[in-house]
Length: 424
Image (cartoon, rainbow, N blue to C red; front, side, top):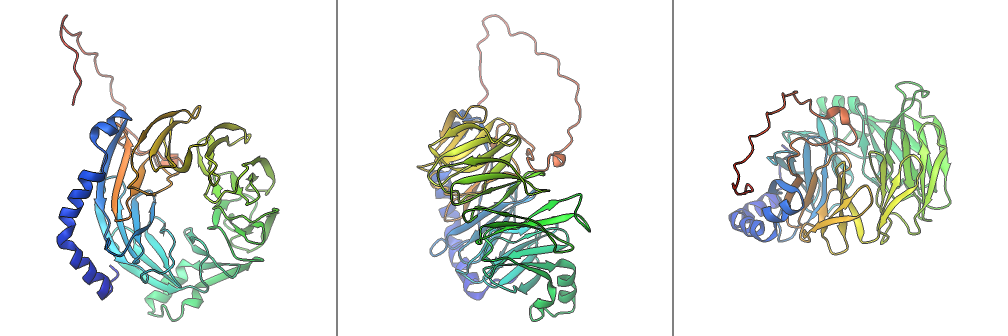
């Protein structure tokens, strides 16, 4: 595990004697009751607390992948939990306190965090430090990665591809971080600052492995570049800057511009499939779940659009943030911080759960799980009642295979006059 700085370590020790009582008070005061959750068809999976000094630090990011939930603090501390059980896996100091950071990026083996001009990699299950590297330029958005490269968007307008194989080689030779520049496999220069995290897509016509890297720039363009040849496949130009993160559903790319336009593009050709005018700028990433894409304009509610036609299915003006979705229900935030349950079919509101203290919410478009946190590091995970296994929206093939069981025999009829009852 990456060693803690002396200051952070001492601060952590100083807060330990208060942690038990403080956490108990927060549990009693903040966590929703079983009755509140039952009323809305929800149940608590787990709750815990991230390693954080609440006297000076706050939670900056909550993120998740198929295995872990990551909570990052302003002091540069990252805490990892098992996404289903809530077991605390590790905590590590990754970067300087109060340095600019982005949410954790991970693959099947390790997690990376950018802290200022440095990037840190740890084993995602143990927190053991793997390597640290000096970035070629200050990042402007969250990096992304595939099995071979890490893609770093920069303030200078360049996308840098760092080769994982080369990084491993430099680490084994004990040449990091001094020789970090040798890990840069290639660079692609756009007109201005890169504004979105790069999104990898698969193309049948691209050379090499067929992988394509897509990213937007302040020069009002979306670029689609072949990973192995660095050849520009297409460039989609808009009339205004693209600042909201991109979304991808396996075939289409979705992007929003500051002039209120929302586009669905064919990822292979860059051609417009449909266009929607939101009426307000969009800064949050659109979220694609099944045959719906949820668009969240600034102070403009949430739109549910059909992914094929772009037709507006419904609009709910009281909502301000996407949180998660199940096959039938959208979970969103309203203007006063409640967790609101919305019927995905018609947009009608089914109920609301007061969670105002849990202001940090992971916008989960991967699974149906709900992950929220307080500024002081209390983390809460919710799910729909009886939903023991997560529903994977992006990778449905990862759903567990359940054994086929013979149907149970129907219960014998109750005796006449026997009172109905409910389990507590």
